Image 1: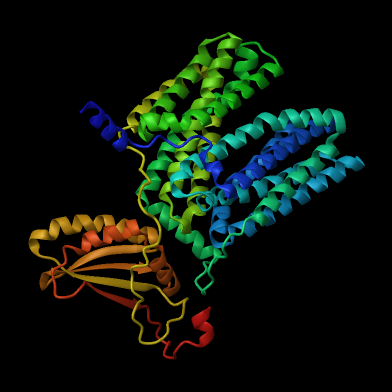
Image 2: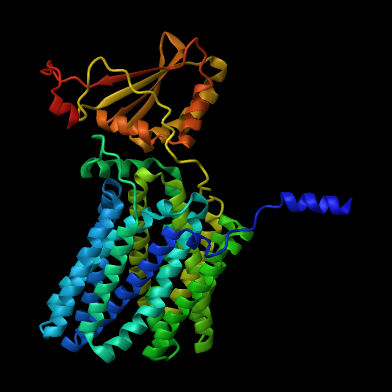
Length: 551
């Protein structure tokens, strides 16, 4: 009997969590991941060369700061437009074009360094262009992950991408410094050009199916409005953004003040500061390897709480210690917690976003992340001037622990809904062809709801209203017939006929379940009646031309 029970338990036990490197079993992901690691190593090499060259040209700290700002400013300016472009363009071709542009930037840097014509102005300008390329590429790189691995491996693939960046961060600066001393800046820039060739070749090797073009491809302005509407309506996205902002705003204190901790509080030199940064990178690599099993043991929300508390503890430990060894241990643990938080928040965001909005949603997340880091860093810096570095780090650690504990009551979305298009809406009835740019469009759905089911039906419609707004409605409401209260009309407005046709394709299988829940309250001989009303213009009497219909 015991053997039988053991056999049943073994048969019904949940499968072990996938290994850290499981996504690399997919050849396409493995090739592109390897190429991007090499590309990121080249980028870090380029940044080291540029930072060193500017110190050769000018001793001004402002010049060095300008190089740093030129590389990071574009993410604030371009993250959301980049997300729009990644959704409306072919992502593979878009990324190939960016690699070509970045290769030309490094080619120009190599030529200037070889000819001795490099200047602070040229370095800042070309660094800014490199930052523009990185800002444009980031949402697209993150958006293609679900195209490279099955849904079950998305979280692992996101973790491996983070691991790859930290591998590059560990190798790139050191290799760049060695090559800079041995071969010069021109050679470093030249090698960076070769890494873009590698990345572009991997993308060319990827035979991505072309996107269907049936006249409904979004234009930039409409796509931007659709992305902002989705972000405004999605409660799941709001929860992730708030958790990200709260964590990064408080956790940014340690990044803003770590140079001061290394130099003034502990008394180390530049090599010790580099060692602390290397310790963070090493911790991030270890954290990425351990993350799948830790996440399987704790679950998503307890993992986020635990890593927030670990980050808070590491921050406070750096405030109270004068020991280099303790500081290295604290930053190593910080790296583990940091990569766990980045990966969990990013993969959860990936899981709740359907493919049509993925780039825009990730761009909004990146904007919130970078904005929280920038604003937090400035705020903690000013506070440190008033109360001291150690006190500021302790305040930040306590605040992070307190907010993480409170936020635990609002769990992150599971991201387990089926977001593939359901395609269950029938084509709208039309007396004659409708021009794609005609609008706005009012859609009315008429239900017959018994009084006994009224409260439950309205609760169900509240959930449905979020889905309508996410998929394209800019206004939504529900009304009753004054003469017949059981006659209830749900209505919503969409900005154009083309946007409504896109809305048909955006409805996911998870959304279809929400709609079915509302429709089950309908009592009548037929399904709820759906009607489409087009805005009339006083002088519009003629039928649309063929050109108008296809525009």
